[in-house]
Image (cartoon, rainbow, N blue to C red):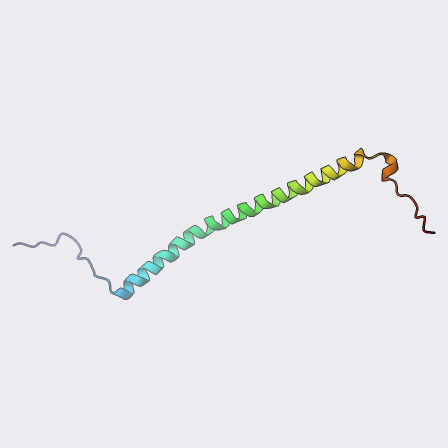
Amino acid sequence: MNHRRTGLAKREQTPVQSVCSRSGQALVEFTLTLPILLLLLAIGGDFGRAYFFDLSLRDAAFAAAATSRRPPEATRRSPSKAM
């Protein structure tokens, strides 16, 4: 039989090299996905801040509407009768 080499021979890796190769790959994947995860976290925080602002504004509007419904006599403070 005539065996011919048709390319580079496949170099076998030792167990230590294959572990280092896998951990290096995991580090590269983590480095590529970390900015995306941080961006999603920042977007979630921004939506939470906007929602809190909306609730605060809505509560203030309801309080103003409730105060404006009262007659003027009910909104004035009467002097203390304790003296």
